Each structure stands twice: as C-alpha cells, then as structure tokens.
Amino acid sequence: MDDWTDEQYGRMARGGNAKWRDHLVESGGGGWDGGDDEGGRGGERGPRLREKVLAEYESSAARVYREALSFASKNRARRSYGSLAVSLSESFEPEAPMPAMRAVVEGVLSSLPQEPAPSFRDVLRLQAWPFAVSMLRSWRAKLMILAWGLLGASFAYSVHFREANHPGGKGKKNDGGRERMDGEVSVSLPSGANACSAFSLGILAVTAGIPYLMLCRVARKVARGLLDNRQDAFKSARNLLAERVAAGRAQRLRRCDVYYPPISRDEELRAKCGLIFFPGTLVDRAAYAPIMSRLSEYGILVCVANLEPYRVLVSLDNYPLRENVMHMLSDSVLLCTAGAWTVDEWAIGGHSMGGWAAITAVTNELSSTIRKVVLWGLLSYPDPGLYPWKRTLREVGTVDALVVNGSNDGIIGQLSSTKDEAHTSFRKRMPKNGNVNARRNRQEGLTSYITIDGGNHAGCAHYGPQNYPRPDGTRTITLEQQQRQTVEGTVDFLLGDGKED
Image (cartoon, rainbow, N blue to C red; front, side, top):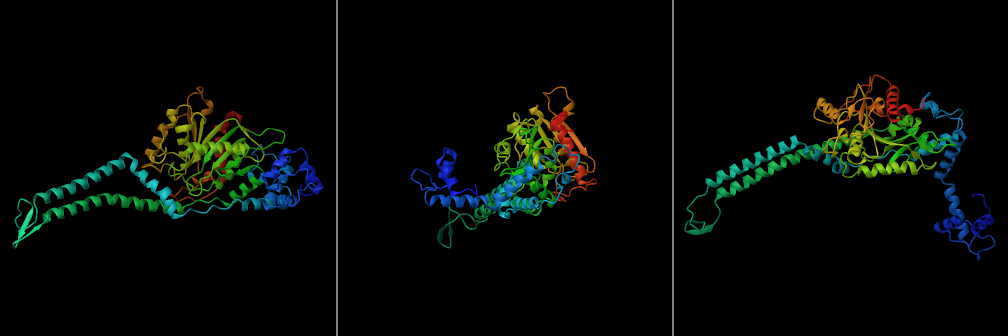
C-alpha cells in the first residue's frame, strides 16, 4: 500500500471493504462518503492518514519484521529443523553471507535489552523479608522462639516479684499510701516498684528486640546476596535467542520466552508436547535459549517463565502460580506471529528453585491439567514456609516426574538443613522410582532419576560460574555434552517412543 495512488485509496474507501473503513475510523482518519472529493481522500483527512500509514510502515520495527519474514520464507525450504544431527550453531550458520539477516539479528538484540537489577530497597522488602520470616515457620524455629520468649518473660516476672516483695523506699507509709517526711505530706509510689517496673519492661523489650534485629540482619544479608549474585546469560545464548526470534522460531512475550517447534509451510502448527519451565534462582531466562532450542527441535513447545526483575520466587504471595501458568500456556499458543498452535499435552518443570514452583503448581492446583514434571538440578522438596503445598507428588498419584542432576552439582540439597535429610525427604515425597516408559500401570505415577557423570548445577543453561548460595562443583565434561544428555533424557521422558530419530 505504500505505493498506492490517491485514486486507489479513494476506490478502496468507497468500496465494500467494511474492515478497511472501520480501520480508518479507529485510526482517527475519519470515514469517506459520497461528498468526498474526486480522489476520494476526504479533504485533509486522507493525506494525514496516508502519512501515518507510511510512517508506521517505514518504522524500524516494521523494517525488522519484514526482513525477518523474508528471511524465514527464503530459508524455510532449504533448512531442516527436524534433526539434531548437527549442532545448533551449525544449523544457524548461513550458507552465504547475509547482511540482511545480520541486520535483523542486531535489531532483535536491541529489542531484547539486559533487564536492570531492582533496587536494594525493593529486594529487601519484597524478597529478603519474606525469606527471613519464612525461617520462623519451621517447628524448630517456633520451639526456639517459644523457649526464648518464656525465658525472657520468666526473668522479667522474677525481677518484678522480688522487687515488689522487698520495696526499697524510706520512711513510714500510712494507710492511704502517703509518706510523711519532715512534717510534710507527699504522695508517691515506692521507689522499688518504679525500678522493678522499668527493669521488667526493659527485659521484655530486649526479649522481643533481639529476634527482630537478627531478622533484620538476615534479611539485609539475603538482599545483598540476591543483588550481587545475579547470573546473566552468556553472549552466545542471547545471540542464539535473537537468531531464533528473527527466524520465527522464538518469541519474547510479557510472561515468558517461547521456543517453537519446526514450522512447515504445508502442515498445521502442532506441537507434540508443551513445557512450562521456571528458571533457576537469579538466572537470566535468556541463558536457557540453547538448551530449549534443542528441545524445540523434537516438536516440543517450550515456555521459559519471565521472573524479572528479581529472578527468584521467594514468596508466592505476589506471584499466583495457577494464573501465571495458564497465561503462559494460552499466550504461547495464541500470540505466535505464525498463527495459533495446537499442543497435544502439557508438562511443567524448572531448574533448581524453579523446580519448587513447578512442584507446587502441580500439587496444589494443576494435577488435572499437567501430568508430567521435569526437574533439573534439584534434590530437595519445596520448603512449605516459602511454597505452601497441600499434598506431595506421591500423594497426587497420577503425575510422573523426571529428575536430572549432575554428579558434580554443588548446589542441590543445600536449601534444607542437611544434604542427606533433604535428599531423603525429597525421594519420600516424589512418586516411586521407576522407568516411566516401561511401566504397566498407567495410573501410577513414577519418577525417573538421571545422573550426568561430570555435570554440575550451572550446566543446565548458558551462565556461570555459580557461587551462591554456595560454590557449585567443577564440570568435568563440556557444556555441550551435559546439555545434550539433559535434552536426550528430557525428550525420552516427555515423548517416549514418539520422539524423532
């Protein structure tokens, strides 16, 4: 339409295209009627509208979108995304120099800026304080607080009782509580009563104040740790995400980043499985671009949740799980620029503490919708003080789970009091150990455990090294090897015998 003549504009306006006329009215250009001029441009309204249309068409955003569509159209036929026989870097390597594609990728990168870190005050108020308070919800903490309170109250009472029975005042007190001194009459309380009241109140204040000051110190330490240990994605991961977006294979939405399966021109948009995935604590969601791109090659539509700006879910009070999961599910299939997708079944998962969110979502509200849970870098069950859950996955009974960990992971299990206790409690609350694809009873949930020899915690994505909340182990295999094994195990769990060769 950018090269239309005035006569063509008028002809379209006067024609039977109701959608076009509605668009003109909504865009503020006004309508056309029989009283318009010969060109059908409606006086001054037509030129103004044409200028507006041209400005939008020639904008940088529209130019990047047109070039991306052109690139995807020209290269869809010659590229095969159905196999991972070659690495992702090779699958995106152009056969010939394409300056237009590089310009598109640079444009996409400029639209995917690094999110700024939140302020210390916001982290302290919205993340660190809920974490510190949650520490008081365990039965051990409650017993300690009760013992401390009883100790302080008993000490204050003993001081008050002793001073009340042995007042330290001078002179003789008459029946009206009046003390006569040097022939004058004055009214006063015994000096001992004043002292014991002030001292007892001081003891009670100290009893209450010390736990509060300790909570403040813990909260400030946690807030500083959350700000100083943010894990940004490797540059290669951000570049890959931009390439995927430019090629129409990924999309950044408000609630999540979506990685789409291969798109064929003559087939419907259909995914064998959809995976809602929560990132690990403080990890940039773009760090998962390489491994999620691999998963999408097998026909899995992946949604990586947006947890910015805090990159952590310390409390679910400000993050309703069911609402956000359902929004990610619907947005990913309905807001794709290529059209609406159909997903055969849905699963949910997470990395590290993101796995806590996945488990809680299923056990509390989504067990009838989601029947598979994928956990990477996790061997501890959600802390009920942070993630209140109504029942365990084993009690749900119909949910299968996959747990993938590296043998050199230095993080797993450290969110609970001891590593052994966390692992034991985790296995008791998860579905029974077994091969999901080889079972006979489909009504019984099972858990498949995979240990990647030489893998570590940060190897589940493109970031690192990780030293918070404690140092991660050293990976003795390549990042490519760890992620390839993770993808293979996840695909086998989600698709079973239906995965592509």
